[in-house]
Length: 103
Image 1: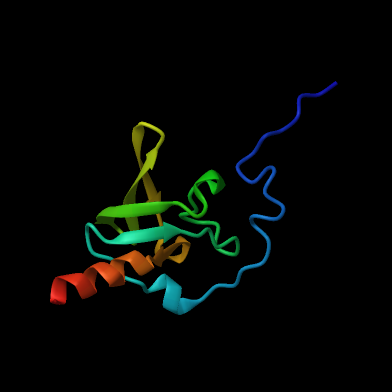
Image 2 (image 1 turned 180 degrees about the horizontal axis):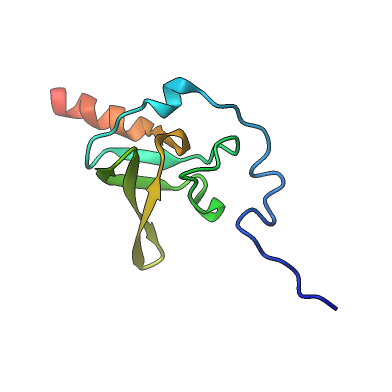
């Protein structure tokens, strides 16, 4: 018997279904310390974070080329991921924090 292949997209039939490319998503800009949600867009393969981080809240550390370095907490460890903006969404938490700062 041959060993089963366990590639990057294995076991993600439902998680990586659908998705369309949007130029507006590609042109998003985030500043350091912004809160973002990792939402993998399966139609864009470049700059895709590992699907196990889907739905996680992350903090932007820096911009690196066209991508962003984001930091997540995985258990007791802090991990840094490099992801393109197509796979990131601005967190609602970010806008609520801005509202608090204005008051």
